[in-house]
Length: 346
Image (cartoon, rainbow, N blue to C red; front, side, top):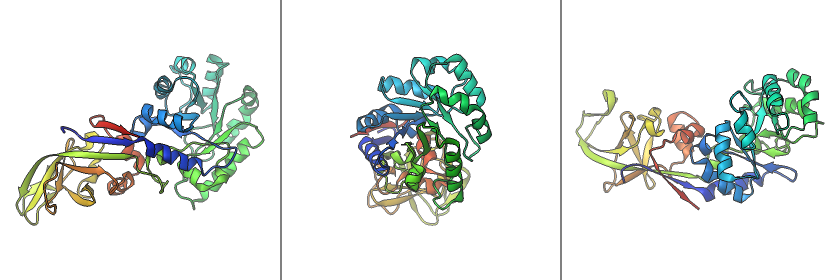
């Protein structure tokens, strides 16, 4: 085993979708966000399984992602593009039946000029100050946009992972002010908003990270297992250092395993001296700095030298790794590199 093996549990992803879908009542459909190559786990494989589970609408960030998804899924499901319709996107949107979520008056004008009969959605800014038309802009253009029959009116919650944040209710009120009475299908909630309850569900929810085992969906089934091979072991004497810049030195004789994996593979440098790999249920601390291709791991306490150690496993989920790295599970998943041998299971 020359490189790491990233195993993806497709049944777990489908089960997580079903669990999130069950939280919404009648009149609400549950879409799936598969941007960034399915959060690093392979959009085509993930989307096919979700399509079989009942997903009828998918979301990607860029038209290029939408094209790849359409080629994988064929005709039928809706594919929405968060970044909208910009110059250079027109042929992709037209030829592959993508639905751009128009984010500005300029995008709306461009879309109506170049693809006047093509479907579209509208993204509204309810208070995140990122993408979308602000309330005054929407008030000005709604009389022209609504008669064209947008497929979706959507916005995005900034603090849905903090249920007690007053921003959630503020954004909910702003979104209602902009969309009530339009008769158009609406979507406000990703994973976090879905967990906030039915007031936030509207006609469509669109979970992302929760499908792949990430917080804030604490009950999600882990979908990724990452196994790294042990290349070499060595005894390190007291006082000897491991890795770049001698940031860790042994206090006693230690058996250090060097495993194949590093920040080029999405194993963040911030894990240096903070994270661990596992043999089964047993943690093995990272020693020294995570380098581009290699990590030093202390296995002094193991009964035998393993041929591999796990970075993601039932004992250490993507949320645990994110905590150790000082980041969020989104970054861990989407950073997983291309050098792993990927194995899909159902």
